[in-house]
Amino acid sequence: MSVLKDILKANKVFYQSSQSPHIQEDESAKVPQRHFAIVTCMDTRLVGFLEPALGIKRGECTLIKSAGNYITDSFDNIIQSLLVSIFELGVTEIFVIGHHECGMTNTTSDRIIGTMIQRGISMEAIKTFCSQIETWASGFKDPESNVYNTVKKLKEHPLIPADIVIHGLMIHPRSGKIEELL
Image 1 (cartoon, helix red, strand yellow):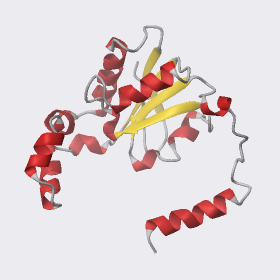
Image 2 (cartoon, one colour):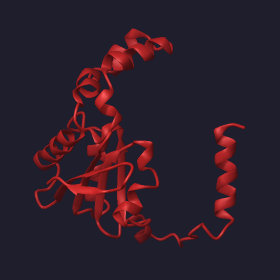
Image 3 (cartoon, rainbow, N blue to C red):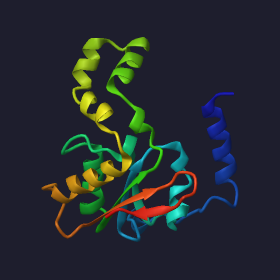
């Protein structure tokens, strides 16, 4: 059975069961009720784990995930999502949450490019669309330093208002223990 069939089957059980929240749709349901955003890693160990570890419930915050919670440029997807969170959804606080044992510490641009070529991606396409792959893939070495750097980039970003409070945290992906970095 394909993953899609499994997902659709699970979804049918979910929405027909008492697990489904059956929330009445209104405009306030789209706005993070606690007015904060989280920028974190896409690591599979954080799925369904991060929110309960932080005491967050559905509808309380916006959650932005990317590989290593790493900002690649001044208008990348993380920045775009935060701008919508701040200016459209009323977010006033941002939490950058890295995690120990992050797989990005072992990622290299050479390995990603080599795998792309093996999978049939042309070098022309790689050169066209992956101009920052060296900086991005090989530049991440330490998840704690990345949290510091990401917080710094956000605090210095000209499109993020100075009154937005920005925190840096680390979570352990096995225990759920949170530590405040800044």
